[in-house]
Length: 213
Image (cartoon, rainbow, N blue to C red; front, top):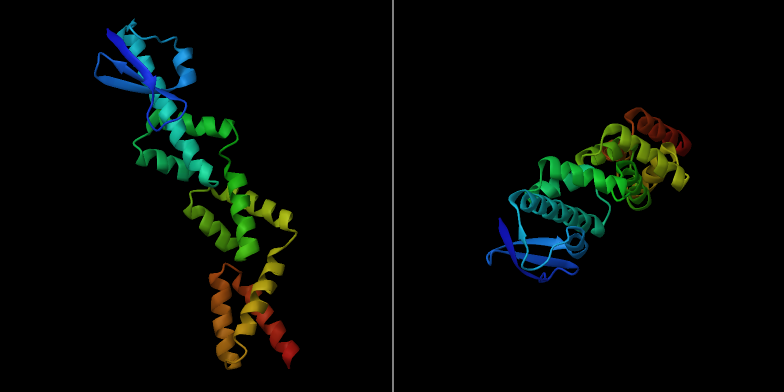
């Protein structure tokens, strides 16, 4: 048995309460969970109920960590899972937290991939391969990444060939003072690093070379 020897507002955590047990250990819970568990000061609680209380506190803390992390900007499922592990939340509690975030619409890897791709298209355009690679580095599965990229392309009303032309023209202008052969090699290397298909890059360079002759 354990006795609740104090219930007070948690310091530096709005909307949470600290439940003091036997004058020493404490459990933190959101205030609404306090009422859900019908807890009151002076009450003695059995070991089984105490374990349920600690589990509820662990789940609430995991959710707090996840939502706080997601509030800064969109994150992939893997990024949130990694953050939970860093905070020593794992196993069933970690997985339950991820599933709950997905159910609430806070966690969606396709939407995350689409938002990521839209930003790149607008600010630093690159090819689909580069986008897939960067999203893979954030733990997004290939299918989710491709679906998100396709959604972003539709949203931005752009195709990969159009992105290639946009990036290539800008880069080619910066190489006008360079020897043509050297410029073409540099342009090819730059565009393939940006994730554009090598065959399409060569075709674009050859078409520009033909137009200039």
